[in-house]
Amino acid sequence: MKKHLLTTFVLLSSLVLHGQAQSRKYVSQFSHLQNYFSPALTGYEGSSLRGFVRNQWAGFEGAPKTYFLSAEMDIADFGESENEAAAGKNAVGLAMLHDTYGAFTETGLIASYASRIQVAKRASLRMGVGVNYNAIRLDGDHMTTEQANDETLTQYLNGFANTRILDFNLGLALTHPNYYISYAVHNVNQGAISSGDEIVGRNPREGILQLGYRSALNNDMAIIVNAMYNNREGLPANGEFNVKVLLKDLVWIGGGHRMSYANNFQFGILLPAMRIGYVYELPMTRSYLLPNTTHEFMAVFPLFRKNIRKSENEVLIW
Image (cartoon, rainbow, N blue to C red; front, side, top):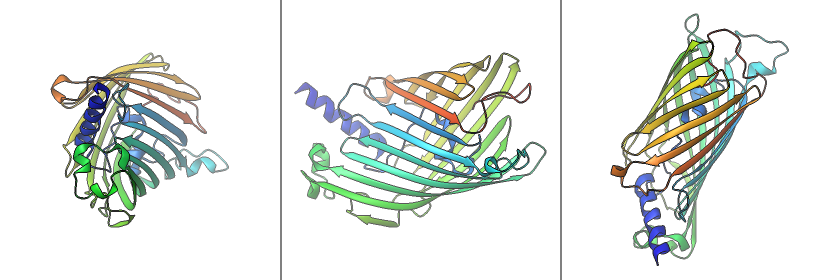
């Protein structure tokens, strides 16, 4: 009985936080996965493979779990010779995210393209577009009592339902070796192109603002600050930030805060051929979330360039 009550609470909490479907994806290490949030930042750090796993409220049945994998390609990397002026002018990306929360399972694919225009000696304007395909599945055997009494969902009790949505994302970013600012809009078409069962309504547009600043304090230490703000109708606005210190181009430590929801502690290792990060997240008491912790693992593999400084003041991560 206790297990059933806890599971029910998890599912209800998940739905309150995420909405009925098409959930907001919380990623504490968002600065390493900029392409997912803004197509304009596709290939911003060059060609790479990226992935993460997020286990929210670990230990509770039905708690949200998120898996992500992406590939970004800077078209200049396929040229016959290295040309720094051409780097990042055109880039393409493909990202896949699989998310489970309560009775819902969502799989999303985003194909993105970005182009860069140099507007100053070290600053560039980047524009991007993404095609977003989502497949959402409802398992009627795992619905809560409230869901089972919902007029839209009750017909799928003890059964399954599937819906597919095609939409578009747009992004614009100003980038510099030491800072960036990006604004993107997801669900530009508000889910107007869809098929399958009607388990979700029209998707509202979501605006996503990202900011970052980094600076080398000396040869052995650099500081990196990132922030993100999401605003979407039907969900509470979400603001978060994190601060990291990179030591000897080898290890980073830091922390972050999601406004009114959670605090986290971050740790990572930077190697020439890869970087890996871990986050330990704790919900705040006033957020009324389950007290269990969240674990998040991230890995990035550069494909053509090593994680090695080309100049004395360069910082290697965001």
